[in-house]
Length: 427
Picture 1: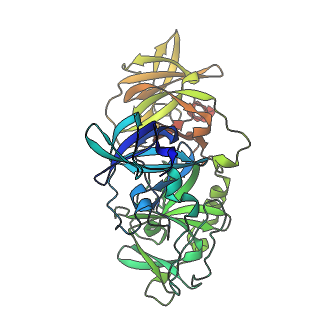
Picture 2: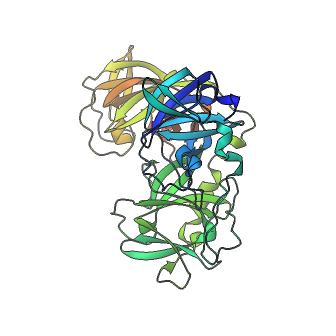
Picture 3: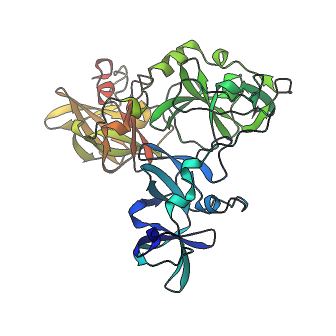
């Protein structure tokens, strides 16, 4: 060991039964572990990649980096320690923190004691991160090696061109061309869109980019009743879409029993056109907009939604509204007196075609360009702020949803005040 290890501040953590420490200057933050996307043929020390504050960050196992002969451990740590080595950010999955910025004087082998516990201090330069190379599949075995920044996935020279990714849907095996497969996800958070065909499950935000997600069983004419067991990100022409499947089986030769599918024939042209209009990656924007917008978070049914706070005039206790005669405009469910005016009332759950949601608990008075409308909601939660770059427009997939916002790691649908007060729905 060099003098680098002597008399400096260290941050300690526990991992796989060991107490380890990294230089405190390299540690940015500790946070709850988020979803990790596995990378095909990545080194054993790389669990995959995770999205951290808009960046795609490799997730490392420092124990495997230091002792490559050890078997892969169960990755159960519930926290990420975000570190920066040589100008690049990494996430280290840890089980718990031990200490922060403690001054230690390790021995020549890097070990020392802290409160009676043996701790191994790690010199980042000894981890060999610059020499990490992907592990190629054995010769003759097909593999998918995709670049998440390219429009089309690349192919390794050992990849067989007739390989397909086998997926299971309703008990049947289907094959997707491996050269179209960009990424595989076991779990993914989907935001459903109301009043769309059943095959369109919703929108998934992957590394700051919204993607349309389709149920493969529905596309093939099935009922789509099985709980999703996998999500396949496909490149279709210049677009990317997500297929929701029952299970991801693995790579197979073309001559296998899997029925080969053509992604360009699975998705209707109108949906591919919509996918092409979805916003691009945050990284493709000329400059990051760090300004923030404020929203009122409300509940409709059992789901949260956001309303632009600038359009909220007042929140009133729920009251009995006046029922309107037959033939009232669509979207108007009653009226109340407010501020000396008769203001139309719209029941939010009915407007979004949700299941019966129970009685309203609050009335939100909205105004836009001199027009007023009362939105009946099942609950009012709190005021939240969302950075403009965390708001993704939905390209008019549903005019009632102005966009998708991310707050505290949760995706919220932002309701369109303009759509609610549209002339054809006004009283």
